[in-house]
Length: 491
Image (tube, one colour):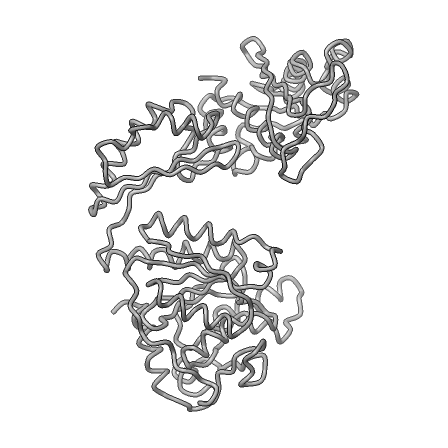
């Protein structure tokens, strides 16, 4: 019997104990202290759910066996419904679940109201064999996930001793007082499978509701992601194998420098002869991602088919494919520089350090990145980067001659193998809407015009590009283009 199934059996035993009163039976069996809900027993409208007394307990939903390999993702919290927090957890979870072979059938978001939470969870148990829920495990009165699950299963909430000890140690190390409401964060339903939270305080837990496996995780993304990858995903993959659901072979290709429509055009007929494969596109400007999924019923066969498709896809896209799966653009730029034994320095104007931030977003950048000069003003361009004042007067700051001087100046200043410069007009709006084309004075550059240069052992090379979008999108596109010049310099 798997550990998760033992948990289900434990839940069944707890339910059979009936109305023994708060903290009896399940808590005593586990050897852990029973924790009372924050509100009085029996409060159901907007308060915590009572878990003591037979009258407060309600029967768990009847077992309805959903098709194996089906999953739903649930987010719990008023802040998501109000639009204060983006539901990024759903995208993360669906991506991993789909790649593993699960059929993700729905995303749901529910309020912190007890009745709403219970109704949604009960409904989802009839729609999928797996529920992954996030949120509602914090210290405040509106964090009610544990109470609702306990009430549905007819068990008590108990403190998870290892999580309590970790919380006490963390609070002591930082000199924080441990207030009574903090204890809410280390509660779990009696008998649940508990998953340690190494990035925070509240542990995750898994239970069986009816015939559905339900995983409840913290809502904070970094905490949720760590628990899900380390503890939940291995169990879920194992379950697919037990249920005979074929695991998919999946690969995501990251493409830079080519639009989605052009990628799609080049890939016409890519899957001819592979009826088990599908291809999916996603834009994450300025990148595009192409995901290929193969489900043949045999994982080894699927992987072999995927390798064949991989070869053909790279032939069609060429150098536009900079990496796959977990490889990021900064990571690949760094790899190219390391392989060339080269160092990089940046001179940035309109991007204000964006390119430097990107290249240092991956660990190990100190191996090749020497630094960046953010020369926003013309005065700094002249004094620090040795841009000739005459060049600025004649051509302006947004010009290839200026970019050339900036790249050569930062290379000389830092003694880097190559220097890359960015200077342009990013515009004034940052609300996601495209910028209108305002009336311009004679000689004034169009918003989105960015000039680049790369200086190194070879003659300095300059380029001009015009990007569209708001200020943030233009700056990001410019930073990518500059780093791509560094990536391709030695190829």
